[in-house]
Amino acid sequence: MIPDIWSYLSHGPLLWLGLTLGAYLVGDAIFTATGRNPLANPVLLAIGILAAVLLTTGTDYDTYFEGAQFVHFLLGPATVCLAVPLYANIAHVRRTALPMAAALLAGALVAMVSALGLARLFGLDGAVLTALTAKSVTAPVAIGIAERIGGPPTLTAALVLITGVTGGIIVTPLLNALRVRDWRARGFAAGVAAHGIGTARALQVHQTAGAFAGIGMALNAMLTSLLAPWVLALFR
Image 1 (spheres, rainbow, N blue to C red):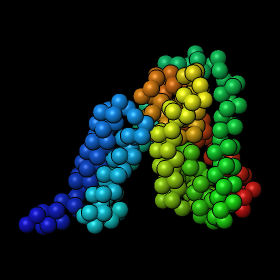
Image 2: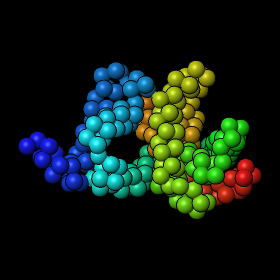
Image 3: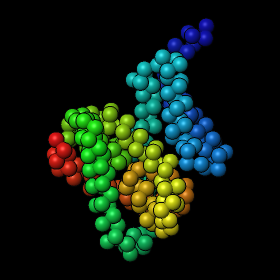
Image 4: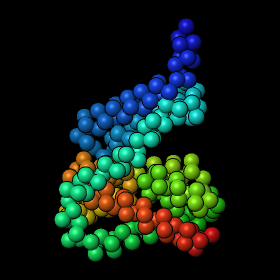
């Protein structure tokens, strides 16, 4: 009886949408219970929960994504909403435009060159190189860049997720260790290096950091889309 019910429900999009949202709520509850410990990143925990469910039930990704695509669609509107803290801190942005431009160029180039250089060092090439090029850009833009330069969108999305989760975990302790106290610098670094997940982490820590993280994420997406084909050509 139960297997029959599961078979019926598993092919409906609402089940996977509900499980996706539920997994994140569980992850966020754990995150809050641990005092917002970076290691208890709610996105990472939600991924683990969903992966366990899919493996246990033998559900393929295509079936799952029929429901999860509604969350995926909201990535665009959620990114646009980051304009609110940007508007609230526009005076800070104007005063720091020049150093932000320098940091943006350095961050975008380091993100691409370091990843591609290490990939080459370990003998990787082809699809992996193209996917790594856009790993520090928010997912919708990264997938577009990958398609433009001939990379696999699925692998690119996976690398973007890994980059964001890793950045979200290490950004706060790393910047604390480096004694970076300026919230503008902290947020901008998080947005450039770890896109949306880094920005979400910055917003949890400080409003100004979140605003500058959103700026960094948006500007890095634009700059990387312009530089990616040229940088990738140097490593092919």
